Length: 188
Image 1: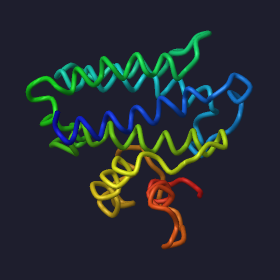
Image 2: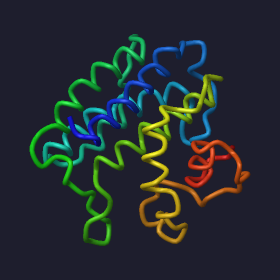
Image 3: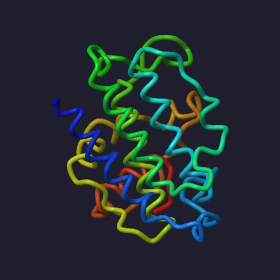
Image 4: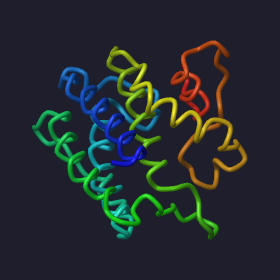
């Protein structure tokens, strides 16, 4: 198993645990990701697994996955964990880790596996913050995301993707994941 797959597995397993600790009574809570309450964020996170699994296999992006209820009456951690198995299998296929995200203006952006890792770690932080869980994340996955992304996604590029707001201030001695969250527009 490559280091990239191991990091994805660690991040996704940690995120599944966070979702597993999430209760229906928390669904209406706001999250640091302004577009989502806890239930909408959980549904978005669950949709990320088949979305990125399809991309890992060379398929086209299916944004429709994000516009539906991906949890239903099930426990979100259980649904997410099922998707993790399929996603990890897709990332182990030959060539999957070399695929890059196409940029809106043309050309290639970051590796899709790096985007997926960022999604799991950052949305895990969002969920942990909203539900009062430990938001430190898996240390290896957090360090990898920090090295690959922090300082490499300038505010000027953010409007083109619409994925992240401008970086926000945070103490330099804040935990690594808090610094990363602020870098991607979250209020810490």
